[in-house]
Amino acid sequence: MYDPTEEIERFSPFGGTLIREVVPGQANSLKVPENSVEAATGVDRDMFAYVPRTGCPDAKQCQVLMVLRDDPSEESARQLVESLELDKLAEDRHFVLLLPNPTARGWNYDLDPEREDDLSFLVRCFAVLPKSRGGVAGFNGMIFYLATTPAASALVASLAATRPLDCAAAFVGAFPQGYQMPAGAGAPQVAWVIDGNEAAIDRLARVNGPEASCDEPTPGIERHVSQGNPNVRHFVSSGHLDAHEVRLAWELMFSEARRWRNDTYGTYQKRTDFSARGFEAHVRDVSLGVNDGFAHTWYVYVPPQLRGTTRKVPLLFNFHGGNCVPLYCAEQSGWHDVADEQGFIVVYPRASTKKSWNVMDDADRPSDIAFVLALVKRMEETYPIDESRIYLSGFSMGSMMTNALACSYPELFAAAAPFNAQNLGYLSNTQAFMASFTNSMSTLDPEVRSQPSRTRERTDAKAAARAAEGVVCRMPLIQFCGMRDAQVGSQMPFAQPLTDLNRAWLETFDYWKAFNATASSPDEAAVDPQTGIPADEVTVEGGDGRFIRHAWHSQDEGSPSLYQMVAVKNMEHAIDLREVHMAWDFMRRFSRSSDGTLVFQN
Image 1 (cartoon, rainbow, N blue to C red):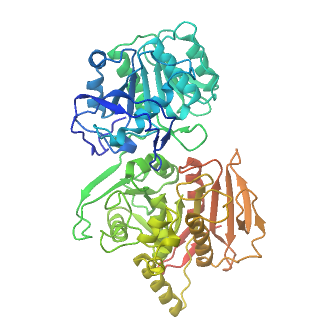
Image 2: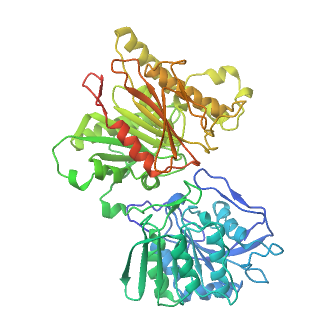
Image 3: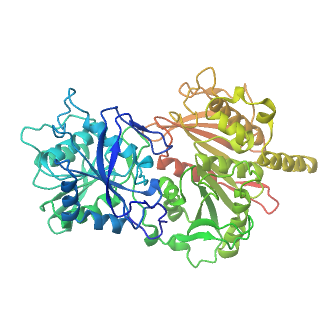
């Protein structure tokens, strides 16, 4: 999907040209948070690539279409690109086009262990993109395959069956005679089938489960929608491989497919048409007047029912992760969909520099704290914002930003929901932060390690001033973390000895429990054996029991649960959309009076 709201920011020196790219056999992994892939090593090979001269969006919003053919020659690649008008499609829709080359023996679609592992080769083709000559990468949940021959169709079918996370959507035709698809994992699959391939059609009907509907979006094409997830769809076409069929497949299937790696086989989530939804883009806007006129970027979503209203409504800020962009964060979290249901406005800001939030508020970088505070004021001036109900949320480094704002400005924000990262803006400093991710804190100079960040200095000074005046200020906060998230060290139960990141989680829990005046052990009577975390209450939630909620009760009047932590089973560095609904259900109960006092509705 290309949406004009999306910034086009990645251009290649070879834009508009078909180039040969080397795919080293040892380039078997890409280690990028939320965009990693893993494969077996193999022999050195190559592929052809086409990056549109019109450019592409940020890697995590960029789609990759791999086109498989049987002839490894450059001439065959050029002819195929021209005959299927793939270059025109890539230019129009701003995606990366790859044409992996088969070996002299052809594609190993039968997965013969004595031959080169072509499935791993396809994954390596994606893995090399960030450092390729073309220089434009894509997102691991939007890797698509277009098979142009029977052998290529069989290879894609084998990939979808055995490595479903690496195949977000597939276009296949007839299989070679005698080919049998592997049993595979039985994971749902978005696909487009031509040439009357009954074996592929039968497999898709099985893995995608009972149908919710079947319609004909255009003559000669059946669209089958899964009952279990309406974003899982397969198409059966009476057409054949040509430029018209490929463009139809792009518009109806590929452009709408996104497979998030948030469970064993991932989850298909609906793509967001930002323009059609009415997102307001403020790109490189200097009007806020902060950070010496720095050009800040943010996006605003106002639900249709709130446009033009004079009734005051809640406001939520959602902060993207490190090396991410706001619209990626919007699709990842779906906060705008919750806003439609619940009636609030959402802001998706962009970090000031290097797609990285200045959570410590270091003086040598633009202050993202000042940016957000100015944005709060702008929103209150522009929209009918209920100043008592301004909320915070964010993922990964956006979670750190959420924590930093929550602890340093508790009088301004009513509640917070950070996802998948600790309160490192307060607990750490930039040097210690970097050391924690390499588990090398013990080698850091103790003086450097103990140096407080500006976020901590501000937070502690304000807390001391409140204490001197006898003012009590709490911050309701619900923390989410994946139990398999090695990226930020939240694998539970925490192994001994603790890593620096493990320790930061426990320090985060203790910080917010103290902030909210929760009772300490031995009142923490419940201990979930799966997490090892003691709490006042532990409940297992979700129809599949995926969520383990830990709740601590404040010693304030009424004993409200002001701090909760939800551990998510089988979750790496990602989000399950159900978490977002849980977050809103928690936060919406809290508001602030004009003096900053917390108001709680049970």
